[in-house]
Length: 429
Image 1: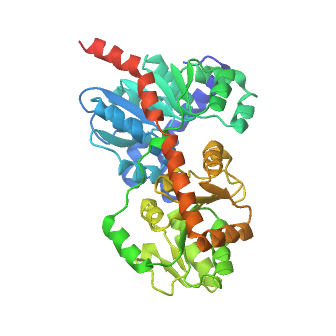
Image 2: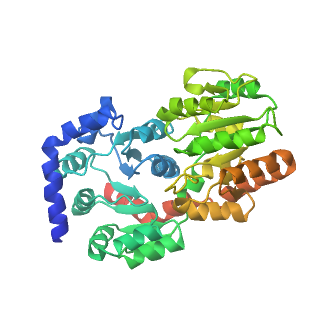
Image 3: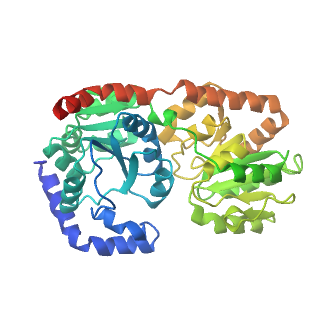
């Protein structure tokens, strides 16, 4: 366990949370932030029995981190492991669990309360533990390390902003990072920052997200919506945040004189905002249909609100020109553009993409993506590409080729884990 006074305070405070955790989870459930049917998992009351044989536990905080682990899940199940993938959000459970292969299953990660952590580890008794990106929970790290379990940080990333923040508490971050047997970083920059803060055995592997298969789509729904859209010029504003849906509608209105049959699909990052997005579009005088209501894309529909969960793969296939959100919104940070790029979409994005700097830089350098800094800039780039189909096709091709060339991280991570596989094989004899 950790010995610094700050960790002792954290352990006491988190222990005190135990008795009130059910009430806290109940409040979060009423806010839509917890799964009512699976609240027990957050208290380390397991949703199922431990499977027989070797068990690898992989953890990612939410949707992005969980999806990034899927290529490793595939490789580990192919090696005969049972794989438990944990995440902490309702959305991630819905999206990630549906894409797990045979031999893998999803559980919610327990709250970082000592008695919950111990109960979780007692029940599951994993043989290998992989945490994704920057998930650093002190009680969980301390308990896994104390049990002598192999612990690896995969797809590790540490932004400049987080690095500067951790420099103010160097002892704390050093103590947590040294619990990992290895840190497998996304980029040389991430590796350098992790080493400066005390991580041991750091290697650069690349980004696992490049190896994630494209999101699936229901073939019948794809055929139905494709038939409704026909040859209309179509673009998608994906994973949008507050303010970006209005920007998409404003851009649409700037283009309708030149492209009168234009269709704009808006997929808000949080599907629950769909009604508000639709109402705002109607307030602009636009004709709107909503996916959540089962409304068709009639010939006069201008804005189609894709307000359902788990269907982005469908909409990426309907539009080969995609604006990726959380990039024009105030405070931004960006959303992952790899999935639409894998499906052959040209990518547009705003200036606020600091959480995915390397990905966007690679796409832009190859000509597969373009930055827009305003509603006018967005409308201008859309107009240029709709008016020049050859440029649009070339941009989409460059986007797909770029993410394909940057793949391979999952194989490199598997190779780095080979010593653990060998040790387990020897121990089992």
